[in-house]
Length: 136
Image (cartoon, rainbow, N blue to C red):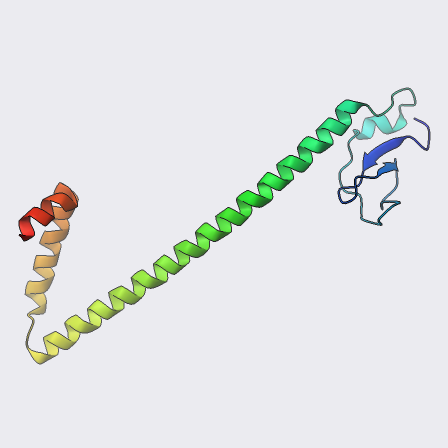
């Protein structure tokens, strides 16, 4: 390869840069993707092909898709965290209400717990539709 042959492109401004250069000549961004394998650095007969540019474009597309997927995953995890916090708060509220009713003598805690376990077993066995019919 001749010293001025374009070996890799800047990710930011897409300017061609000669092999061995660490920063983009146009915008100064650090060059991170090298399109040509290291073995081709010493090969003086081969030149950069359109195939290399196509691979660079595909890498950029994959990077963009990966970034979007990471953002969607982050949003999903945030939603899951909020749901978990809401569930915890609801459970704490119910537990506090049961304790308050038990202290007032309105609710028998052992009987409530037995009924709760029975309902959970029915729900697991028959699904919610069966429970709605039993409630009527």
